[in-house]
Image (tube, rainbow, N blue to C red; front, side):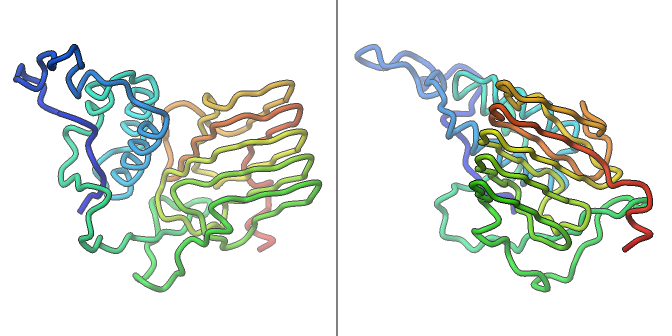
Length: 242
């Protein structure tokens, strides 16, 4: 089942709940949404992709709508047709998530692992920090739906080519000063850099962007200040050397 929570009243037709409340209080659906609520909806959309309810193209379109939403009525529009939305505080046991390997070059789709054969994403990998350091993630490291990178004056390499990921869409948040950041993704991957703010930084990509076309998609958001961000595919011969 799909887990999450809707925000406010989803009824699109006129009802007493849409009428102004006593004392001039606006109806629930007209209340403004916060960044935390937008982030929560983004997580629900990522889970929907993992369950096959949305394509990667639909995910990108709905994420853009959610990020631009001002009211609960607007943001709920991207969730209203997703079945089985549960409250996040529900105590019911959630079904196990399928865990997948990022696809190798020349393959398509996802190679599911036997449930329980891979440990869950560790808290240390959910937030990667570095101060005047060399930070690398290579090989079969575990990546959840969201990953935060908090670095200062560091050399960073995140190599997703052999990563074990729990969803085909990964959201990478960057909060960096004066670091060089390299992201290496599988040959079929797409990367969205439109939400990354570069302040005195250089951003270079040799990876397909725009609407997702492969089986692995990375959404990069946040800020890079006086550093560099490079996104690329593995070099030629990478897989033969392994």
